[in-house]
Image 1: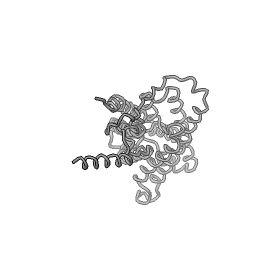
Image 2 (image 1 turned 60 degrees about the horizontal axis):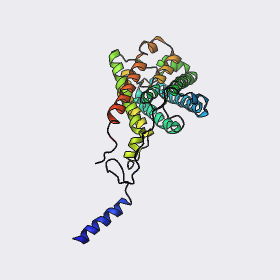
Image 3 (image 1 turned 180 degrees about the vertical axis):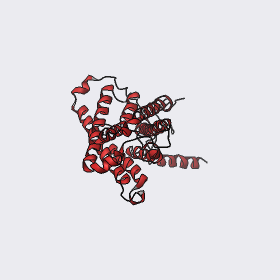
Image 4 (image 1 turned 90 degrees about the vertical axis):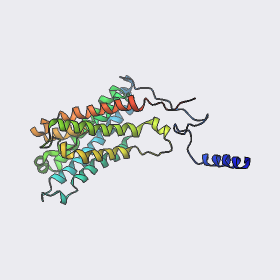
Length: 292
């Protein structure tokens, strides 16, 4: 009997040499490193204004949002401007969704280490509410994101002026058959999905707890954008990003682009706020581990 118990102990030791230990679910031993919560970002941090990394991050947000609008709106123009009048001859709605989601995946991967890879004022707003960045940085990011979006849409118009002006310019609006309430609801829920995914995919506490589960953060974030676009393109053209909606509206600059424009700011900001509240109050309220 004692021999069998010794074999079990030896087997457990061999297993532990090749498996991650110390996660919350597994209840690691005395050598486990506790997760340390980073302090909340200050509301205003004057030192940031004298740091090159602060401005470098803003430039990264500008360029990323510029490229995001350029590729995504150009894809939209290729679909809606198809001379045959049939989306079968183009990438279709699925292609548009892949364009938005794929670019977010690529750009978040490229800029995450520089600015955090927000590329969206709603994401920035949600992270600000969760005290992940200061008000100074949040406002700077939003300004740079909007400027990048305007420039990106402007380049698309420069390449395809007639096609751009004759096919809506990629501007968001509530589709016929839907009410403004429908559009607002779609934007709230869609942005909630995106920002909730951002919180979950970038949560350092989760990374410490689930260290045995490798997560490439840009992948779920980009996939969330893809799925939300599949669901809401028929309703609003999918905003969930105020900078994207503003850039297209300013460059297109026709009445239909401005009639429902408020929805694409109010909806995403409400959705981002709800995601931040859910993450901070509900998800992060669960103790990391308990000790007897």
